[in-house]
Image (cartoon, rainbow, N blue to C red; front, side, top):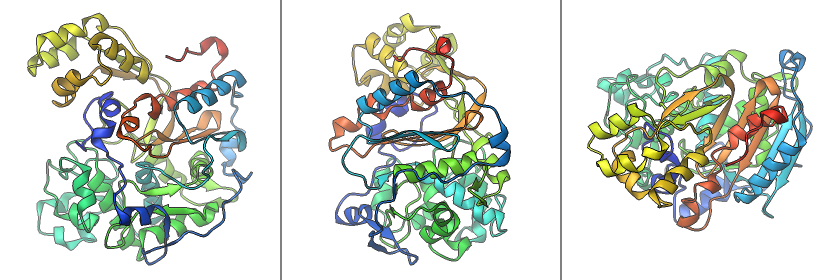
Length: 453
């Protein structure tokens, strides 16, 4: 299924089944993966030579530069490197206050990597260029750009809804339906309404595809060209590829391939509140909105901003009486409720630790029973509570991460190429879900460090 459930660990154990960011298959997909988009939106060979890893360009605002911060603990950094390597990462970058503390390629291929759903977060940045220039407003109805919706109930869907997973568009049963479509935008436009716009959270792959089309129409050029003009040229990003549909329209749900060091530049842009070097690329107000402002409707398992995720200082998961009561009311067999009884009221601050505890009580690495009786019914797997927000991050399946922690002047990137087998895609540990927490921990005093699960 392609929908993001209103729960947490389901995202990990069903990642392969969701295939939310799965690239298209077949010759067309291979071409899209190995080519770059030209201003016309058609594929063309990517011949730009590789840039040196992480040039020392700036990217921090004056206010940020004046703030105090704690130095990264070298032992914690070494543990992060080891954990990244053990989880089949292809690249790891950690920067603090504009300096590279760690920049590692674990694989010999130094070419752009599919960023998966980080593509959505990049589209949010590009939307900011159009808002800053007055070409778009988040309150605008999508129907102003796509009049086919003008006389339908979908005319209530705004640009803001596309940016907050609240458009109400029916996302279908699988992303396979999306990848079979000749036009991703037309498919989104023809999708039915599953709920009233702005009333329900529903992870929006089709909505993201439509946002890519909105950017093209509002800018008067292709999505790729708008992104180049808005972001990539000011940041010196020249080597990228973008998957396109049969009509030449860039995908919105996923498909943007970037070098890890260029993804880090986008993180520095966010850290600098829209400023990179001597240039204000995006307004500070827009960066504040998409990375720090809570979305009107959020999933219960992690704090959300506007196509970016908010990063709390801590996340705690507890299977309590309220969670079990919801299971029972929904008809979950008592035998399953009793299985998790040993975990009742026990807090977990690690995704992997929680998954492993569930595996232990069920005696099943795939958690098949839990998937069928809890996650398939969109029931919560735990009660989630969060500490204060300390940063923001963009995330794509397979464990693509861009993490920004402003108060500690940290930017971190972890990227992983799509594995060759389905078994590898399903490996929860290899997606490194605790990576954002590990980045936050880099500047904690040694006495406050939590052991890895």
